[in-house]
Image (tube, rainbow, N blue to C red; front, side, top):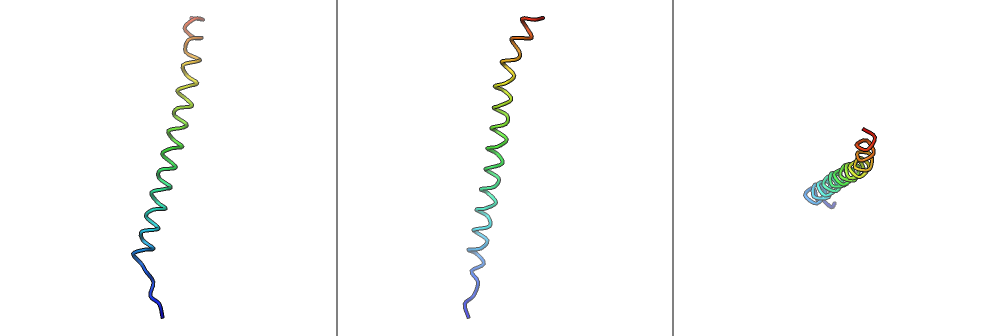
Length: 50
């Protein structure tokens, strides 16, 4: 009977975990960039009105 290759399974699990972390990091970065792009547009309007 064939034996499981646990080191390969562990390696694949680690790659999946790192990929998921990277996707989360990219999503957070995208949200942050979207907020910073929206804020400068609002700030000059407030300064002019004030």
